[in-house]
Length: 335
Image (cartoon, rainbow, N blue to C red; front, side, top):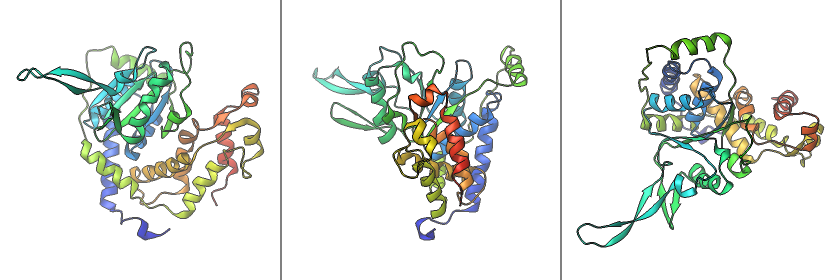
């Protein structure tokens, strides 16, 4: 590792970030019961400056989680319900004619859409046509919107958390690969344990209501994201991330036999970038001063599960992506 590539990381700054992450967990935990893994991964997404695709059946607190996160970070939150009749301008905004009351002249004025917020919940994003889904591409990648030949920057920080319902496929559209690749993580929500569900029912059917207190501001979050990017990472760790991703591609000589048999196409270089960035965020939020291979493995499933495309043979033999990732993690050595 070339130390000149990274500024010195302050131990005090790392400790402060770790404390703020714990404070966020405590505030979100006031209203989101259980779901610790999804909370942890959502915070990793946030501190890494990325977007996340959340898959889960209705009623598992996906909306509540993101809304609670926006309150704990004191950010503007907008929920966009994606429907078959939603148009791109319904998301990004549009130019409207406005009459000047003094001169009586008409002029074009840009009316911002709901995407102009810090945290966006794109609910059931696969329920809208590809044309409207594509409207999110520029916002997610460039953090800007272009309407009528003019470009408008989105507020900072800017994060998209999109949901998909895995059990109701009627009236849905496959998420374009180019858009799916913009999501840093794909997170799977699961049913709560019996004890957690009993607590959910007890606390949500009474008269008391938890109040979330902001523990970090938007500007402080931006500084935390800069700190995450400054966490050192060795050439060996980067090589491990690239080695892991390259083995997901069936056309490469490094690909294992089962990848060639069951995968239509593998992950792009963006996966390698997100593996390293996720490992940095994992290190910074757990009090460590550098990213390591274990951090890569910690985020591998979230980064790869929506970037590996199984072929017909895999579906016929019921070999899902999780099985392939588990085998890759087992077969690709750290050293």
